[in-house]
Length: 357
Image (tube, rainbow, N blue to C red):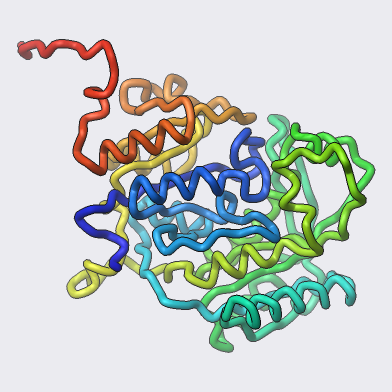
């Protein structure tokens, strides 16, 4: 079925990476919300931070898996999304990964080939270790840097030249299993310290190659913690985070220029097709959200606590958003828009009309 039909309301779901959202601040814990919004809208565009659950994942043809930089370009109207039956996923491994951990990731890829029927390959390693460094900003938001971003881009170019239509990246991340920040995260507070650096890696590749890319960190397994927060449990089920990335990329849409629309209109998804955007109420400052505001697309703000306070009131947009107390309520608003029901008609008091001067 085409992604855009008369019965669907293409909806953009954003949960920014590395800002400590109560829902979406862990690997895959926003996935139930995404599933509900996909059912309500009939067509959901979202990003790996929402969908990646480490060893856990969910595949739904109504959900389009789009990396964050590509999602910004899509919302701005620079790129369109072309649905595909299957991507050929190139596997890019950091040269800094130890042999045993590298073999674990190769076995995950083989498992996805044998069990899920995914097309994976070629596989190659960077010509030098990427050198990932993790940082926290003054606000507590996570970010990171690479010592050798050029090695990442060279490897990506080689994979694309070898026929890969999407790229899964596995980089060796630094570890400090005794850190207080990690303990707080595992127990349900704090920020995902890896997320910001992961975004740096995937953004660089997508910007350079214009094909779907997503990242999985290579880490040693942590010791058992009986007090583990349920939101962190998915991250500790196995040896790698790679399976969810491979599943997400397997049907990720191609990233195409929004030109030559004749004949492709019924298949491609363009920014002007969007009927709603759903975003945490304190994270309205991103490029994709502001592009949607400029286009007049309804913005649904969800009470989802995070480190950011870029609210509708702070941006002077309080009268241009639809507030929701939960993602369940947001799904109801999306469904009302899809059915052509004015959201104001569902609320009380309903103010009487006044004649304009």
